Length: 154
Image 1: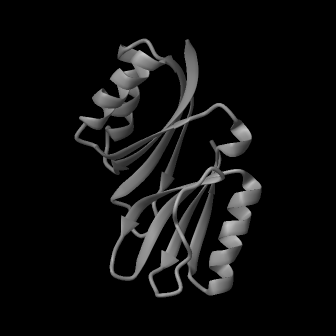
Image 2: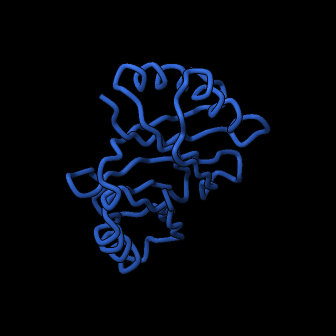
């Protein structure tokens, strides 16, 4: 049975990286519904985020996951079911690291994925409904830990 999936890939920002990723889909006969790319805050433009939405059977999706994770350009790969578009909104949050940080544990409403961490800040991808994303972003802003926020469209 065909299901919709979202791959979230942290990739090296270099010529040919996106082409190598998308070519894997074409070689395996998997059509990409949507592709979006973003800079990841705090990485000095060395890494980007590639978000791909596609339909595939479970076996083919698993095979694609293995192939993509082996690419030299791919440093992190996450997969999410993409069944409910309203619950698959995204925000990149760049936060100051301090003792007042807010809980970043995933739950049934929000999923958190750390993309980058250094001495001064940490960057998370947060996925959920727009309402839940806005509430959590407001928490960070009120605590004074929010450096920047990038709303994602996928």
